[in-house]
Structure formats: C-alpha cells, structure tokens
Length: 314
Image (cartoon, rainbow, N blue to C red; front, side):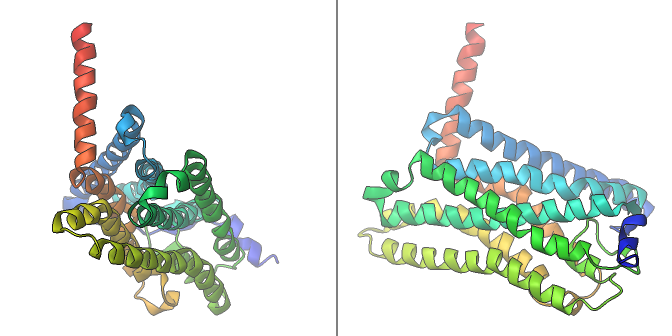
C-alpha cells in the first residue's frame, strides 16, 4: 500500500513538445491562435442558436450542446500544451494529472454519446418526418443531452480510478497532457488487466456508439435513395454531411489512439494523433457547421440586421 501511495507524493513531468528555440514562439502563437479561434467559433454558435428563433430546432439544440462541450474539451488540454511548448518539460502533481485525465475522458465519452444522439435526430428527421417534432420534443432533447453527460462522466470513473491506483516507478509522461496510455507505461507492474478493462469501458462508449451511428445512417441512406428527385436527395444528404464529417474526424483519430494495447504504439506517437481529436476537431467543428450550412448563414444575416437596426435606433 505504501508503495502504491508513492504516486501521491511525487510529481509527474509532462514532456510535451520541445520545438527548437527558433520555432518555439511560432508554435506557441499558432496553438494559441487555434485555441482562441476555437473558443470564439463555438461560443459564436451557442450565442447564435440562442439569438435566432429559426435555429430553435432539435438539430441546432444538439449542435449548441456540442459546441458547449468543445469549449471545455479543448480547455482541458491546451493550457498544458501551451505551457510545455513555452517552458519545456513541466511538472504536474498527481492530483491535477488524474483530474485532467478524468475530465478529458469524461468529455470525450460524452461527445461519443452526443454524436450518437445527433445521428438519431437526423434519422428521425429524415425517416420519420411526420412524427419528428413529437418524437424530439423539448423535454426529450433535454433528457437526451443530460443522459449523454451523465453517461460520459460515469463511464470515465472506471479507467481513471484504475489508473490512479497503479504504482508508478517513472515520472516522465511522453505527452502534453495526462492520458491513459502514457501513464500506464510508467507503472511498476503489469497493466494488461487494466488495459482490458479500459478497452471494455471505452469500447462501449466509442464502438457501440459508432455502430449505432453506422446503423442509423444506413437507414438514412435507404430512405434518401427512395426520394423521387435528385434535388430532394441532395437536400436530405446536406443536412447530414456536416455531422458525418465531424464523426469521421473524431472517431478516426480516437480509434487510432485507444484501440489496441497501450504498448502497441511507439512512445510519443499518441500526442501527435491526439492533436487531431483534442485540438483540430474542436477547431474545425464550428467551421464545418457554419460554412457548410445555409440556415446558419441566413441566421447570421438576420442577427446582423437586427443589431444594425438597434445601433441605428440608438
């Protein structure tokens, strides 16, 4: 027990990225710019959905919830990324490390469930159009969104607690934030059993949701192909294209990191792939949902016109 408790009396060290001094400032400013643009883009979507009544549909409700999640998701890891870029390998206390691990995985699993719910929403809109609004009433929307958060934060307790219970003989984490695989490589004992439990829990949150999304989009594809005209088929597909792109980005990079044993990948490779789902995906989401969406563009115009009218009145 005393050996295991050593985890709590020493600091870990986040190795992070160590660019040369010439590129250090450029990398820092680049990451900081992406971070600030991500915050601005996702907050913009949240405010726009609230400000324009035409976006008061279940689809945009879930998009705004996703944007709210992305604000916290990217804020969980980017501050430590920026710090390690600027200062090099940096100490982090075990308490902060495992808190970061828990919050990051909680938000990640919540996003998995939320993407599945968004696919269900598109299925109901296209395959059950006459019953769509009765199925996706406001109380159902709130219940589904709440359930995704509760499920995500509950599931993440298992891998976090198991990892925190390990005895650690090394302290250098080959990552820019505390993640499962880099932490498990530092353990003094075998972690095969832990890896199987982690795989089972994360597999339910990712694999099952991904299969659900594939099944729902299979039903959507069949329904769309039955539409009589090419224009109607294109319109139906356009309502799903943004969501499909986000799903492909998020799940593709997440599977690359979390599928398979932690020792099966080269040490340090996790942090490169993590840049996609922890930094790039939250940055691209608001761009995908705005630039590819005519309804959002029209809503922006309406909000700008109202603001202009208010300013003129003043």
